[in-house]
Length: 255
Length: 259
Image (cartoon, rainbow over all chains, first blue to last red; front, side, top):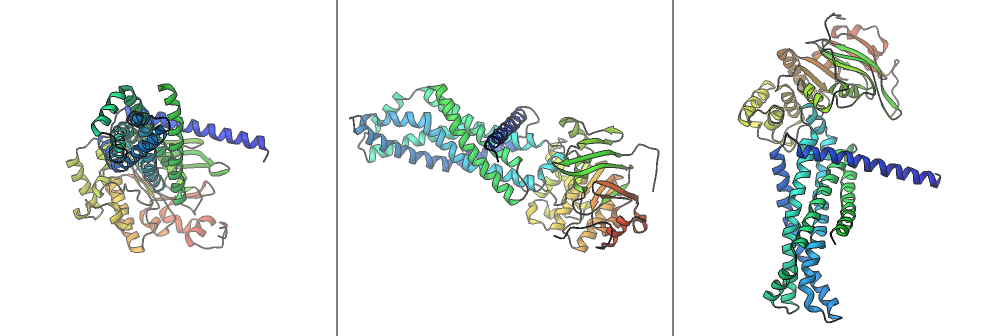
């Protein structure tokens, strides 16, 4: 194929996909905000996305905080700045690593599960069945998932922030010889409300992206096991890329 | 063939539908009278399922009109379509039961989520609907995955009839079932359609099913209705396509590509 035509086709395909995702997002958000609300669906999703993701997010945070403390100590030692470990750990966790790493783990866990579940519902005509039962699939499936993710991911990130800081504290006090109480006091004195809040705003946006990609790719899944498999992969990959892109945009706004 | 002057319950006029270069429906015209059971027959890939999904509003036709009780439903908004759906009941080929819900919640789904019926009342009605398709209360708390194919079809039928719809749709109701279970399903469909006084539209290529559940039969071939008549006329249709389909012979005007 002519290289120019190839570029043109690619741009057209990307534009079409972006348009389709935007339309889907609009329908999803308006479904989440307008009645009828399916509170039992919302509750189930809050449980699945929030509560059942706690172990994954907690483990990610504790090891990230611990590794971060070691790296900052090693780097800081080069110019006698080891004492800044608590400050940089708390800043790095709350503003960047907490929201980004927790959301990446959730992209793997939640986006994939949503895409697989909704994709299987598409393939087995359950989504068509919802329509014939006078139930809008967007209100029943997409809206509650988006709302649940936007609510629960910031809460998970807040938990990740605390656990991540404690991971840094554990390494610093047990291996690097920091005083425990001083470490905590330094962390609390240094971190600002905005550091935490900006991370939570990022988390809400990432939660939206995670649910949107899971629902979008599942809802538009092709027929067969291969179609559902592809939808699941696309959901995770696109959610991860969009999280990185959104993180950069939000970071430039928040600095 | 029965010809009446009254408005058909379902009227389909010059409906076309293509997917890319694949022209599936090429001008379908079909009327279904109120209280009649219409079965659309035809080989695989002739457009039966697409036609059914167009009537249900799950697929939007490229052109043509579909009317219910004389009112066009093809251009309805999502909200208007939801209202029309309230008078439909549908049995899907694979059951399409929600595997995250129990049997009774599947049956009572419309009552719970669309009609706002309380859980206790909805459960009573679901159990009554299950009894109508010969399923006992012992299965109500099971998950659909724990049921056999025939039982899933019966649960699907109970879900279709629980809200007493005016129009019932059946997509290949006996596909994948053994002959005895298929006969049970056919009898249940016939009995429930009669009990509700509903209009029914089924698609199938199972001639045993056709003889059991049909009042009227239409044959679709290459995206058009090529014959329609009473069910008792199907064996003496005088139409070479219908005759080949009924006898299941390889020889005739319908050419099946070697697979």
